[in-house]
Length: 200
Image 1 (cartoon, rainbow, N blue to C red):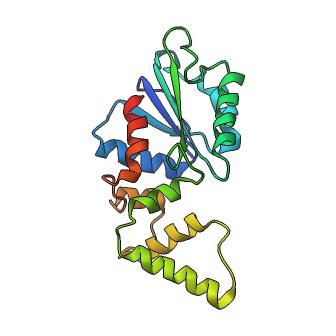
Image 2: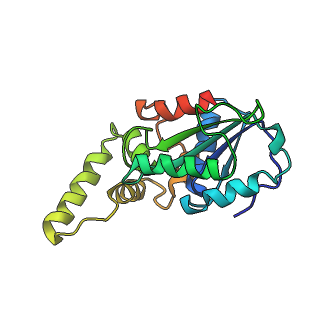
Image 3: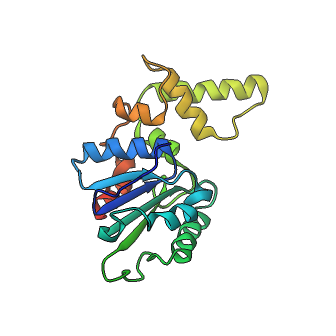
């Protein structure tokens, strides 16, 4: 994946992976925000290393806002703690702690909504709950459960893949689906993330 060689905006939004980056880029376009640069830190276990190298990238000294996102997975508190630890270990400000050099501040958003367990896929599914195809996806997994006794380990990912497979172009990934306009940015499900982005 292409690495960031220069920070060109005063606000930086970090996503866990490529899909997050692509979704955030499309959401920023929808919100008509063009002063936030979006990058990926390539996985939750790599955040601390990424923050260490971030200081060395030209343009870092001009940053005024750093937004970091991560999936809650099964434990939103642990996800938040891991980000705060990575910030502290790299001498970067944690939210509500004041600013570094009276300039840079940070904010954290734990997907899907900064309040519950889950991930980006949960957020995307929540944004299309009014789509009639979702009931078909639910029925499909219920049928699989009834017939085989089997269920996916990660139901959110499975539902997203099944729903995307039902579209006219069935081979899109999460970020590609965002670019194609599949996710409903006007859904209340996106409001917490939109508010977070607007606050950076």
